[in-house]
Image (cartoon, rainbow, N blue to C red):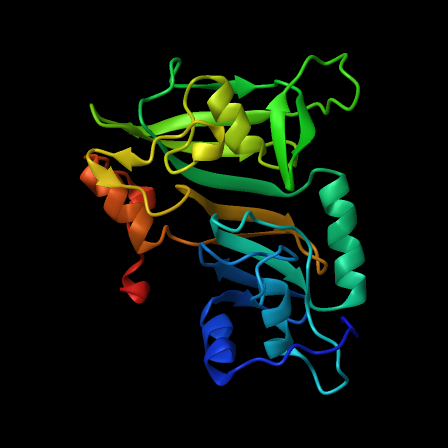
Length: 253
């Protein structure tokens, strides 16, 4: 679909991005993005996921385009449109909040209460060359209404596994909202998260885009799922956390 200058991809990059496909049809492409890979842009001089989508270019030079983003250190489900009509359809669905995103995260202690809704407004601020979000009063200039549902799936003396559903799509929303209730995500020092869990170092931000339900251009809804990667599961195991979401399907073992 995109007609920008194609990225010069290596055979290894092409093989890698093709191995991340978890669903593909005539309209959409769904990938399981690894942590450490930027969705788009960024200052690191390396190919982003957006660049890697040139691996799926058609003979007419068109290729899929991302319809939403994940933070660089967040792993999991990400959606791309393969045609211009599909991109327009999904863009309208996002504006209407018809996409349901479900994340898994590790925190150093279970939330209290175990589940609830966070509706704290957020404000984007620039600190040096970095963009941050912070909680704000609803009346503050630039404050954006933000809502997150959370639910504790498993807990131990060492930490907890939580399910997060953002009802709005603000930058760093899940990270700031969880920090606002004293449960910053493990591996997120920017917002006060611990760098270890159960004595084990956190290799990155412990946030995984687990499931995505979206309206399909052909009608009805589709739900796609990506099991947490090994680094996430190992740290959860070190904290004594067990839950069905941490299991990998037999076909992926």
